Image 1 (spheres, protein in one colour):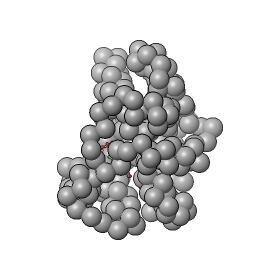
Image 2 (cartoon, protein in one colour):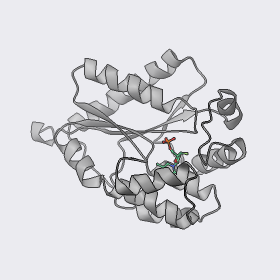
Image 3 (cartoon, protein in one colour):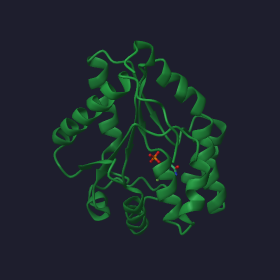
Length: 211
Ligand code: FDM
């Protein structure tokens, strides 16, 4: 329907390997949408500010060890604890730009060898993104950009496995952007597809759930 009360914000997710440029594109996109007068917020997962998020952060910075399944479920719990806030933001017409989501959860854990379906299961029932943008870069090129910060997963061999996992998850609803293009070109493509997505959500596209 075109009822104005059905209008809602869009759930936009950016995914990609470490050093693909996601985080800077998220902040550029945020400023752009704000300038256009949209109500918009920038989120990221893991959200390290919560109790669960602090456990995740300590794991990523190698201050603690956890079983692969256990950390997987913590990443998922970290999304579940934000689910209701996420839904109310969308329903009150705020667009969310999210740096990593369930696809990171599945890609990183399955890259360790965990079963893909097992990895997907705890994500079922979380809000489905209206748009997933994959910033595409090879693990080798990403590593050349330097600045791997020494967190647990920031190693070329592991990133190669993550890239393969992302390939399995990708479907034709994802918007793939070549992340090796100049920043402004990536930004331009991103803006266009995001504006289209926001328009569809404004027209009352129903909220749906994974998977
Ligand atoms: N990561 C991120 C996961 O392993 N599972 C998840 O569910 C999410 C959201 O955490 F290496 C990994 C991906 C990355 C690390 O992410 C921290 P940021 O974007 O560097 O904070």
